Image (cartoon, rainbow, N blue to C red; front, side, top):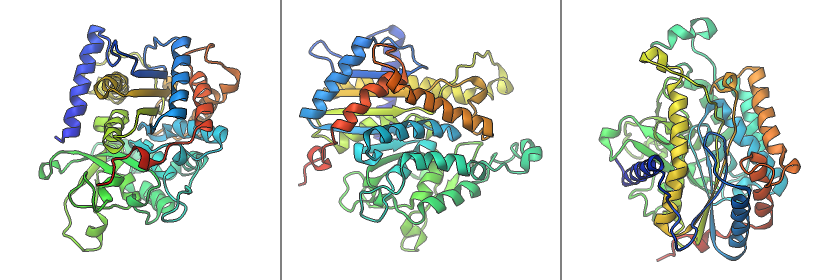
Length: 426
C-alpha cells in the first residue's frame, strides 16, 4: 500500500475507535480547530444553530484576513450525481462565479469525478475560463443517461448477462466522454485535481490505490518521479468503472498510446472501492500541495443517502444492501477522520457537508427512469432552493441553512492565488 493509504487507514481506525468510545477528537483545549457546517442527514448531527453561526463567522474572518486553501469534493453515486451538480449550479447562480474560480483543489470519485473534471475543463488550452458550468453537468446526466446506462442484452436478457459480465458496456460512457472532453489532457485542467481509481494489476506496482493528480504531469513534480499524462476521458472511464456495473478500463498513458514508451498493464476500476467519499484523501493531498495555507475549507457533496432497514443473511440477502451500507458507513467515518486531522495538522479545518436524504425507491445508482430523474432534480432543487426561506436558526442541520450561510461568503471573498499557499519554489 502507498504511504497515503496507510495514513488514511490509520486515521480511520483511530477515529472509529474514538467514535465508539465517544472520545472527543480534533479540538484541543488550546483552541477550536474544527468548524463544522453539517447538513448530512446520514449522520446524527449534534451541531446547534449557535455552532453553525460561529463556523460561518470564523470562516468569513479567515477568508478576509488569512490564506485559506479551498477544497471541493464530490462522492460517487452513479446517476445520483445530478444532486451535487444541482447544488453547485445553485452556488454558481448565487455567487455569479464559476466553481473552478472558487476552489483550489477539486476531488471526485466515480460520478463525482465527472463533475469536477467537467468543471475544471478549460474552454481553450491554457485558459482559465471553464468549458462547462454546473448546469451543463446536470444536462449531461439528463440527456445522456440512457447512453451511459445501456444494458447489455436489453431489459429481458440483462439479468442473465450479468451473471457472466458487467451490467453495462463501457462503450456508451466512453462515447459520451469522448464527445464532452475530446483529446483534453489531465495536465490541461484549470484546477488541481485528485480523482480516485484502483488498479487491479497492482502487484506490479507499489499499491492498488491510484490517484490521478494534475501534479503527476509536471516535469519537476515531487509527487511523481517520471511525469505522466492521460486523456481526461480515460481518467474518467477509470474512476467510473464501478464493479458489476462497468468492466475494468484498460488504461494507457498518452506516451504509451503514441508508442513513445512500452505499454504497461493497468486494469482500472472505480475508486469507490476504498474512497467513495474522497474528502479525507483530498485533505491529505491539500496539506502536501498547500503547506503555506493558514487553514483549509472543505465543501463535501454527497450524492444522496437512503436509510433502508434490513436484516440480511447469506449472499442473496446481502447483495441488494452491501453497496449502500459500505458507502454510508465510510462517509460517516470520513467526517470523524477529517476532524482528527485538524488536530494533527494544528490548522483550522472548515468542513461543510451536504448530503440529501432520498426515499428508498429512488436510491438506485442506475435508475434512469423519467420519474427518478425528475425526483432527483426536484429534491435537490427543493433543498438548495429553500435557502431564501430559511435562516441558520431555523434548522441547523438543513441544506438550506448551510448553503444560506456559505454562499454569501463565497460570493464576497475570492480565493487567494495558488502561489501564496503552495510550496515555495526552490
